[in-house]
Amino acid sequence: MTRVTPKASIAKQLIKSFYGKGPLYSYWNACSQGGRQGLKLAQQYPSAYDGIIAAAPAINWAEFYINSIWPVFYMESTQQFPHDCELNAITQLAVSACDELDGAKDGIISDVDACRHIFNPFKQVGKTFHCTSTRSKLEISHAAASVANASWTGPRFSNGKSMYPGYEIGTDLPTLAPTNCTGTVCKSGGEGSVEFAWKTFVKKDMAATLKNATGRDFDTIYRHVKQIFASNLETNEVDLRDFRDAGGKMITYHGLADPSISPGGTLQYYNKVSDFVGNVTSFYKCYQVPALGHCWGGKGGQPEALFDQLRAWVENGTEPFSTPVVVTRSDNTTQQQILCPYPQKPSFNTSCSAKNSTRCWSCAQ
Image (tube, rainbow, N blue to C red; front, side):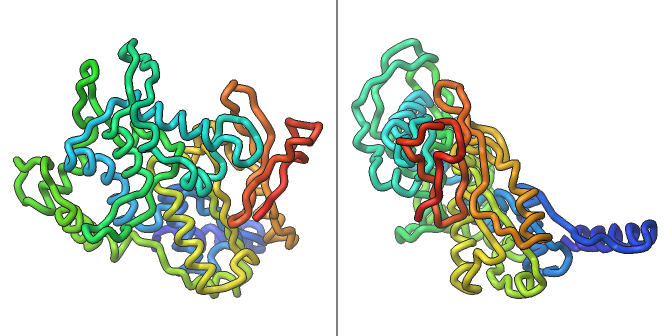
Protein backbone atom coordinates (compact mmCIF):
# COMPACT_ATOMS: atom_id res chain seq x y z
CA MET A 1 0.00 0.00 0.00
CA THR A 2 2.92 2.35 0.60
CA ARG A 3 3.70 1.96 -3.11
CA VAL A 4 0.16 2.79 -4.24
CA THR A 5 -0.11 6.13 -2.45
CA PRO A 6 3.20 7.64 -3.66
CA LYS A 7 2.29 6.65 -7.22
CA ALA A 8 -0.96 8.58 -6.90
CA SER A 9 0.93 11.57 -5.54
CA ILE A 10 3.56 11.38 -8.31
CA ALA A 11 0.85 11.10 -10.97
CA LYS A 12 -0.87 14.21 -9.63
CA GLN A 13 2.44 16.11 -9.67
CA LEU A 14 3.14 15.04 -13.26
CA ILE A 15 -0.32 16.15 -14.36
CA LYS A 16 0.19 19.51 -12.68
CA SER A 17 3.64 19.89 -14.24
CA PHE A 18 2.35 19.12 -17.74
CA TYR A 19 -1.03 20.88 -17.69
CA GLY A 20 -0.26 23.64 -15.24
CA LYS A 21 -2.82 22.41 -12.74
CA GLY A 22 -3.57 19.18 -10.93
CA PRO A 23 -6.51 16.85 -11.61
CA LEU A 24 -9.88 17.98 -10.36
CA TYR A 25 -10.73 14.50 -9.09
CA SER A 26 -8.96 11.20 -8.50
CA TYR A 27 -10.56 7.75 -8.49
CA TRP A 28 -9.69 4.19 -7.51
CA ASN A 29 -11.55 1.27 -9.11
CA ALA A 30 -10.38 -2.28 -8.38
CA CYS A 31 -11.45 -5.71 -7.18
CA SER A 32 -10.22 -8.45 -4.85
CA GLN A 33 -6.70 -7.51 -3.74
CA GLY A 34 -7.33 -4.18 -5.45
CA GLY A 35 -10.57 -3.91 -3.49
CA ARG A 36 -8.60 -4.45 -0.29
CA GLN A 37 -6.19 -1.71 -1.35
CA GLY A 38 -9.12 0.61 -2.02
CA LEU A 39 -10.35 0.11 1.54
CA LYS A 40 -6.83 0.62 2.86
CA LEU A 41 -6.64 3.93 1.03
CA ALA A 42 -9.88 5.11 2.62
CA GLN A 43 -8.67 3.93 6.03
CA GLN A 44 -5.09 5.24 6.03
CA TYR A 45 -4.88 7.82 3.23
CA PRO A 46 -8.33 9.44 3.29
CA SER A 47 -7.40 12.36 1.01
CA ALA A 48 -5.61 10.37 -1.69
CA TYR A 49 -8.73 9.68 -3.76
CA ASP A 50 -12.09 11.42 -4.06
CA GLY A 51 -13.96 8.29 -5.05
CA ILE A 52 -13.22 4.60 -4.50
CA ILE A 53 -14.79 1.43 -5.82
CA ALA A 54 -13.56 -1.44 -3.65
CA ALA A 55 -15.13 -4.58 -5.09
CA ALA A 56 -15.03 -8.06 -3.49
CA PRO A 57 -12.33 -6.84 -1.09
CA ALA A 58 -9.94 -9.28 0.59
CA ILE A 59 -10.50 -7.58 3.95
CA ASN A 60 -9.62 -10.22 6.54
CA TRP A 61 -6.92 -12.37 5.00
CA ALA A 62 -6.68 -14.87 7.84
CA GLU A 63 -10.43 -15.39 7.94
CA PHE A 64 -11.04 -15.65 4.22
CA TYR A 65 -8.12 -18.07 3.86
CA ILE A 66 -9.52 -20.17 6.70
CA ASN A 67 -12.96 -20.03 5.07
CA SER A 68 -11.52 -21.21 1.75
CA ILE A 69 -9.95 -24.34 3.26
CA TRP A 70 -12.83 -25.11 5.63
CA PRO A 71 -15.02 -27.23 3.26
CA VAL A 72 -12.07 -29.48 2.40
CA PHE A 73 -10.99 -29.71 6.04
CA TYR A 74 -14.55 -30.67 6.94
CA MET A 75 -14.60 -33.42 4.31
CA GLU A 76 -11.22 -34.77 5.34
CA SER A 77 -11.85 -34.66 9.08
CA THR A 78 -15.26 -36.34 8.80
CA GLN A 79 -14.28 -38.59 5.87
CA GLN A 80 -17.31 -37.52 3.85
CA PHE A 81 -16.66 -37.11 0.11
CA PRO A 82 -19.87 -36.55 -1.88
CA HIS A 83 -20.03 -36.77 -5.66
CA ASP A 84 -20.05 -33.36 -7.32
CA CYS A 85 -23.35 -34.32 -8.98
CA GLU A 86 -24.91 -34.51 -5.51
CA LEU A 87 -23.64 -31.06 -4.60
CA ASN A 88 -24.90 -29.61 -7.88
CA ALA A 89 -28.28 -31.26 -7.31
CA ILE A 90 -28.55 -29.63 -3.88
CA THR A 91 -27.77 -26.24 -5.42
CA GLN A 92 -30.41 -26.72 -8.11
CA LEU A 93 -32.98 -27.61 -5.45
CA ALA A 94 -32.01 -24.47 -3.54
CA VAL A 95 -32.44 -22.35 -6.67
CA SER A 96 -35.87 -23.88 -7.28
CA ALA A 97 -36.89 -23.12 -3.69
CA CYS A 98 -35.51 -19.58 -3.54
CA ASP A 99 -35.60 -18.29 -7.11
CA GLU A 100 -38.81 -16.28 -6.87
CA LEU A 101 -38.24 -14.72 -3.45
CA ASP A 102 -37.64 -11.41 -5.28
CA GLY A 103 -40.71 -11.90 -7.47
CA ALA A 104 -38.83 -12.84 -10.65
CA LYS A 105 -38.41 -16.36 -12.04
CA ASP A 106 -34.92 -16.19 -13.49
CA GLY A 107 -32.97 -19.10 -12.01
CA ILE A 108 -31.06 -16.78 -9.67
CA ILE A 109 -31.10 -16.54 -5.87
CA SER A 110 -31.31 -12.84 -5.03
CA ASP A 111 -32.41 -12.95 -1.40
CA VAL A 112 -29.78 -15.22 0.13
CA ASP A 113 -30.80 -14.34 3.69
CA ALA A 114 -34.38 -15.48 3.17
CA CYS A 115 -33.12 -18.55 1.32
CA ARG A 116 -31.10 -19.64 4.35
CA HIS A 117 -34.30 -19.61 6.39
CA ILE A 118 -36.42 -21.66 4.01
CA PHE A 119 -33.95 -24.13 2.47
CA ASN A 120 -32.57 -27.02 4.51
CA PRO A 121 -30.05 -29.25 2.71
CA PHE A 122 -30.74 -32.14 5.09
CA LYS A 123 -34.36 -32.27 3.91
CA GLN A 124 -33.05 -33.08 0.43
CA VAL A 125 -31.40 -36.33 1.55
CA GLY A 126 -32.81 -39.32 -0.33
CA LYS A 127 -34.03 -37.35 -3.34
CA THR A 128 -32.96 -38.87 -6.64
CA PHE A 129 -31.65 -37.15 -9.78
CA HIS A 130 -29.83 -37.99 -13.00
CA CYS A 131 -26.06 -37.49 -12.94
CA THR A 132 -24.67 -36.69 -16.38
CA SER A 133 -21.07 -37.72 -15.63
CA THR A 134 -22.02 -41.19 -14.34
CA ARG A 135 -24.96 -41.55 -16.75
CA SER A 136 -26.99 -42.95 -13.90
CA LYS A 137 -29.52 -42.07 -11.26
CA LEU A 138 -28.00 -40.98 -7.95
CA GLU A 139 -29.44 -40.17 -4.55
CA ILE A 140 -28.52 -37.17 -2.41
CA SER A 141 -26.63 -38.49 0.59
CA HIS A 142 -26.37 -37.21 4.14
CA ALA A 143 -22.68 -36.58 3.41
CA ALA A 144 -23.57 -34.22 0.55
CA ALA A 145 -26.03 -32.32 2.75
CA SER A 146 -23.41 -32.08 5.52
CA VAL A 147 -20.73 -30.71 3.20
CA ALA A 148 -23.15 -28.20 1.66
CA ASN A 149 -24.26 -27.06 5.09
CA ALA A 150 -20.66 -26.72 6.33
CA SER A 151 -19.74 -24.65 3.26
CA TRP A 152 -22.70 -22.31 3.79
CA THR A 153 -22.41 -21.90 7.56
CA GLY A 154 -18.65 -21.35 7.46
CA PRO A 155 -15.76 -22.32 9.72
CA ARG A 156 -16.29 -22.63 13.44
CA PHE A 157 -14.13 -22.85 16.51
CA SER A 158 -14.25 -26.08 18.46
CA ASN A 159 -16.60 -24.38 20.95
CA GLY A 160 -19.13 -23.77 18.17
CA LYS A 161 -18.50 -20.04 17.75
CA SER A 162 -18.35 -18.77 14.18
CA MET A 163 -14.94 -17.80 12.80
CA TYR A 164 -16.22 -16.15 9.63
CA PRO A 165 -19.35 -16.09 7.44
CA GLY A 166 -19.56 -19.02 5.04
CA TYR A 167 -20.25 -18.91 1.33
CA GLU A 168 -23.72 -18.08 0.08
CA ILE A 169 -26.28 -20.57 -1.18
CA GLY A 170 -25.93 -20.65 -4.96
CA THR A 171 -22.13 -20.61 -4.98
CA ASP A 172 -20.64 -23.49 -6.97
CA LEU A 173 -20.22 -26.20 -4.31
CA PRO A 174 -17.82 -28.48 -6.26
CA THR A 175 -15.44 -25.51 -6.44
CA LEU A 176 -15.57 -25.13 -2.66
CA ALA A 177 -15.50 -28.86 -1.88
CA PRO A 178 -13.92 -30.65 -4.86
CA THR A 179 -13.85 -34.43 -5.04
CA ASN A 180 -12.31 -36.92 -7.47
CA CYS A 181 -14.63 -39.80 -8.21
CA THR A 182 -14.33 -43.17 -9.91
CA GLY A 183 -17.90 -44.09 -10.59
CA THR A 184 -19.66 -43.24 -7.35
CA VAL A 185 -16.61 -43.75 -5.11
CA CYS A 186 -15.03 -40.39 -4.27
CA LYS A 187 -12.07 -38.92 -2.44
CA SER A 188 -11.06 -35.34 -1.73
CA GLY A 189 -9.82 -33.39 -4.71
CA GLY A 190 -8.74 -30.22 -2.91
CA GLU A 191 -6.59 -31.37 -0.05
CA GLY A 192 -3.48 -29.45 -1.16
CA SER A 193 -3.89 -26.10 0.61
CA VAL A 194 -5.51 -27.44 3.76
CA GLU A 195 -3.01 -30.29 4.06
CA PHE A 196 -0.16 -27.80 3.76
CA ALA A 197 -1.61 -25.75 6.62
CA TRP A 198 -2.22 -28.93 8.63
CA LYS A 199 1.26 -30.36 8.13
CA THR A 200 3.05 -27.04 8.58
CA PHE A 201 1.16 -25.34 11.40
CA VAL A 202 -0.29 -28.20 13.45
CA LYS A 203 1.65 -31.44 13.08
CA LYS A 204 4.95 -30.00 11.84
CA ASP A 205 5.19 -33.27 9.95
CA MET A 206 4.95 -33.34 6.16
CA ALA A 207 3.81 -36.98 6.29
CA ALA A 208 0.76 -36.25 8.49
CA THR A 209 -2.76 -36.82 7.16
CA LEU A 210 -6.02 -35.04 7.92
CA LYS A 211 -7.97 -38.18 8.75
CA ASN A 212 -9.61 -37.87 12.17
CA ALA A 213 -8.49 -34.23 12.60
CA THR A 214 -10.51 -32.40 15.25
CA GLY A 215 -12.05 -28.98 15.75
CA ARG A 216 -9.24 -28.12 18.14
CA ASP A 217 -6.79 -28.84 15.33
CA PHE A 218 -8.60 -26.36 13.11
CA ASP A 219 -8.41 -23.81 15.94
CA THR A 220 -4.64 -24.25 15.81
CA ILE A 221 -4.53 -23.69 12.06
CA TYR A 222 -6.55 -20.50 12.47
CA ARG A 223 -4.31 -19.20 15.25
CA HIS A 224 -1.16 -19.66 13.18
CA VAL A 225 -2.69 -18.17 10.03
CA LYS A 226 -3.94 -15.19 12.05
CA GLN A 227 -0.42 -14.54 13.34
CA ILE A 228 0.94 -14.56 9.79
CA PHE A 229 -1.61 -12.25 8.17
CA ALA A 230 -2.86 -9.96 10.92
CA SER A 231 -0.10 -7.36 10.89
CA ASN A 232 0.27 -6.45 7.24
CA LEU A 233 -2.62 -7.66 5.08
CA GLU A 234 -5.79 -7.23 7.09
CA THR A 235 -7.84 -4.17 6.20
CA ASN A 236 -10.58 -4.06 8.79
CA GLU A 237 -10.30 -0.58 10.34
CA VAL A 238 -13.87 0.67 10.73
CA ASP A 239 -13.19 4.33 11.53
CA LEU A 240 -13.73 6.00 8.15
CA ARG A 241 -14.57 9.42 9.57
CA ASP A 242 -11.48 11.06 8.08
CA PHE A 243 -12.40 9.73 4.63
CA ARG A 244 -15.96 10.96 5.11
CA ASP A 245 -14.83 14.37 6.37
CA ALA A 246 -12.46 14.73 3.39
CA GLY A 247 -15.51 14.45 1.13
CA GLY A 248 -14.67 10.95 -0.06
CA LYS A 249 -17.28 8.62 -1.51
CA MET A 250 -16.92 4.85 -1.70
CA ILE A 251 -18.86 1.97 -3.23
CA THR A 252 -18.31 -1.71 -2.55
CA TYR A 253 -19.99 -4.49 -4.51
CA HIS A 254 -19.62 -8.21 -3.99
CA GLY A 255 -20.95 -11.16 -5.97
CA LEU A 256 -23.20 -13.48 -3.99
CA ALA A 257 -21.80 -16.48 -5.88
CA ASP A 258 -18.18 -15.59 -5.12
CA PRO A 259 -16.27 -18.87 -4.51
CA SER A 260 -13.07 -17.10 -3.41
CA ILE A 261 -13.99 -14.46 -0.82
CA SER A 262 -17.17 -14.75 1.21
CA PRO A 263 -19.53 -11.81 0.53
CA GLY A 264 -20.70 -12.23 4.12
CA GLY A 265 -17.32 -10.98 5.29
CA THR A 266 -17.73 -7.79 3.26
CA LEU A 267 -21.20 -7.25 4.70
CA GLN A 268 -19.86 -7.89 8.19
CA TYR A 269 -17.27 -5.14 7.68
CA TYR A 270 -19.83 -2.73 6.23
CA ASN A 271 -22.14 -3.23 9.21
CA LYS A 272 -19.27 -2.56 11.60
CA VAL A 273 -18.45 0.69 9.77
CA SER A 274 -22.13 1.63 9.95
CA ASP A 275 -22.26 0.94 13.68
CA PHE A 276 -19.11 2.97 14.35
CA VAL A 277 -19.56 5.95 12.03
CA GLY A 278 -23.33 6.22 11.70
CA ASN A 279 -25.23 7.48 8.64
CA VAL A 280 -22.81 5.43 6.55
CA THR A 281 -24.88 5.60 3.34
CA SER A 282 -24.12 9.32 3.08
CA PHE A 283 -20.61 8.44 1.87
CA TYR A 284 -20.32 4.65 1.57
CA LYS A 285 -22.66 2.16 -0.11
CA CYS A 286 -22.52 -1.61 -0.43
CA TYR A 287 -24.19 -3.60 -3.22
CA GLN A 288 -24.73 -7.35 -3.21
CA VAL A 289 -24.77 -8.80 -6.73
CA PRO A 290 -26.81 -12.01 -7.13
CA ALA A 291 -25.13 -14.85 -9.07
CA LEU A 292 -21.93 -12.87 -9.70
CA GLY A 293 -18.67 -14.76 -9.17
CA HIS A 294 -15.38 -13.35 -7.92
CA CYS A 295 -15.17 -9.88 -9.50
CA TRP A 296 -16.88 -11.11 -12.66
CA GLY A 297 -18.47 -14.18 -14.23
CA GLY A 298 -21.64 -16.06 -13.50
CA LYS A 299 -25.22 -15.27 -14.44
CA GLY A 300 -25.51 -12.14 -12.34
CA GLY A 301 -24.04 -9.62 -14.72
CA GLN A 302 -21.55 -6.85 -14.06
CA PRO A 303 -22.64 -3.59 -12.34
CA GLU A 304 -20.99 -1.55 -15.07
CA ALA A 305 -22.79 1.72 -14.32
CA LEU A 306 -21.36 2.05 -10.81
CA PHE A 307 -18.23 3.95 -11.80
CA ASP A 308 -20.19 6.64 -13.65
CA GLN A 309 -22.56 6.80 -10.68
CA LEU A 310 -19.60 7.20 -8.33
CA ARG A 311 -18.33 10.11 -10.42
CA ALA A 312 -21.75 11.77 -10.37
CA TRP A 313 -21.88 11.30 -6.60
CA VAL A 314 -18.45 12.87 -6.11
CA GLU A 315 -18.70 15.64 -8.68
CA ASN A 316 -22.39 16.55 -8.63
CA GLY A 317 -23.66 15.19 -5.34
CA THR A 318 -26.00 12.79 -7.17
CA GLU A 319 -26.40 9.93 -4.74
CA PRO A 320 -26.88 6.47 -6.32
CA PHE A 321 -30.02 4.80 -4.99
CA SER A 322 -29.91 1.82 -7.38
CA THR A 323 -27.83 0.62 -10.30
CA PRO A 324 -28.86 -1.33 -13.43
CA VAL A 325 -27.58 -4.79 -14.23
CA VAL A 326 -28.29 -7.35 -16.96
CA VAL A 327 -28.68 -10.93 -15.74
CA THR A 328 -28.74 -14.19 -17.70
CA ARG A 329 -31.83 -16.19 -16.86
CA SER A 330 -31.99 -19.98 -16.64
CA ASP A 331 -33.27 -20.16 -20.26
CA ASN A 332 -30.17 -18.14 -21.37
CA THR A 333 -32.22 -15.04 -22.19
CA THR A 334 -31.28 -11.77 -20.53
CA GLN A 335 -33.27 -9.47 -18.30
CA GLN A 336 -32.67 -5.93 -17.10
CA GLN A 337 -32.80 -5.68 -13.33
CA ILE A 338 -31.45 -3.40 -10.62
CA LEU A 339 -29.18 -3.71 -7.62
CA CYS A 340 -29.98 -1.90 -4.40
CA PRO A 341 -27.66 -0.53 -1.73
CA TYR A 342 -27.68 -2.66 1.41
CA PRO A 343 -29.85 -3.15 3.43
CA GLN A 344 -32.41 -2.67 0.65
CA LYS A 345 -33.18 -5.52 -1.73
CA PRO A 346 -34.51 -5.52 -5.31
CA SER A 347 -38.16 -6.47 -5.75
CA PHE A 348 -39.87 -7.32 -9.05
CA ASN A 349 -43.39 -6.05 -9.76
CA THR A 350 -45.08 -9.09 -11.29
CA SER A 351 -47.94 -6.97 -12.68
CA CYS A 352 -45.54 -4.71 -14.62
CA SER A 353 -46.19 -4.81 -18.36
CA ALA A 354 -42.60 -4.09 -19.46
CA LYS A 355 -41.15 -7.33 -18.06
CA ASN A 356 -37.65 -6.70 -19.40
CA SER A 357 -37.24 -3.20 -18.01
CA THR A 358 -35.66 -1.80 -14.87
CA ARG A 359 -38.95 0.09 -14.41
CA CYS A 360 -40.42 -3.17 -13.14
CA TRP A 361 -37.99 -3.21 -10.23
CA SER A 362 -37.80 -1.22 -7.02
CA CYS A 363 -35.73 -1.24 -3.84
CA ALA A 364 -37.38 -2.38 -0.63
CA GLN A 365 -36.25 -2.98 2.93
